Image (cartoon, rainbow, N blue to C red):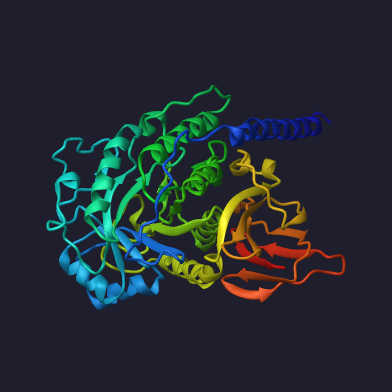
Length: 463
């Protein structure tokens, strides 16, 4: 009897704590964001921004033969963020692959704490005549994961770069929300009972500082949500997700909507050892698909897989080994990219207006409340599972669209079933694995979807 009471007590306690977490963080959705953000002007880039862009992070630039260049194309990758030289760029150009180049043409790529803050910085002093251009060059990698005190210097460099180049991108990638205050360079405004909420407060200030200072027409972030630890009691590994994952995307997506910017997301492909633990979580196809559809739910315009080759962490799980062989993860990414590209045209006809989670209290990675969104296209949404719904409006006309993603902890291997109404809809199309098909209601007017672990779909609604 005592064991039964103990089980119920734990369940009730967990429920009450999760509801308190949702209530506390829901207040974040109403807190004013940046006071004077820069509304970005869109650049006419040398690459097509009217579709979903797929990137790969890192490459062995000595492997310029046709076979290895074809690997990039066959994976469904449009561009690489990589070191570069003329031979590599020539090879990429031959295969239609773009490159955002690191440390190329005299423009250094900075990272973390170091940045040239002098007036002699090459990003400030180079001239149009100095600029080393190439048909494959999409732009130059300026800095990875800067602290907030670097933003004023980055703003000068960005302005200098865009004034002296034509259609190239000055690429900056921001920290994720689980970075600490020292890394971000911003401190939390308020005390919270959990470090996750303090991180969110600090991160919101970090993003505010960026959009108030740096006028890029995109915001890029690397988020690696797939984690694994060893259970001390059993000695067995268990999988879980970064608790601030969705809130991180939510903060950036709202900043993008408010300031006319595109969201770029670097996803986790490579295996990540966690804080000295001996186990490494290797992403499978469902893990990769889960991240991609989650990013799309917040309006992502570019998805960059890290790592393609020669990056960090577990090299055996990069798409391509150091010596140029394809790993199993290559084929996982290839499959996901194929379906993302198949829905790209339809997706690009819509703009993201926000996202919400159904049954958020059930999973640790969904309990931090997202910004409020009003989306009347869906009514009477019913499910026992945790679902992420990304909300979209047509760029032209009155059509609506939404993503629906199975947000049950993926290691549970549970399907997610949902039914809902779409009042006034005359035609409904669901893109499952990128393939469109008509979705029809039952006799009671309910539409139904059943999603595999990690699966997401894109649905368009015409009236």
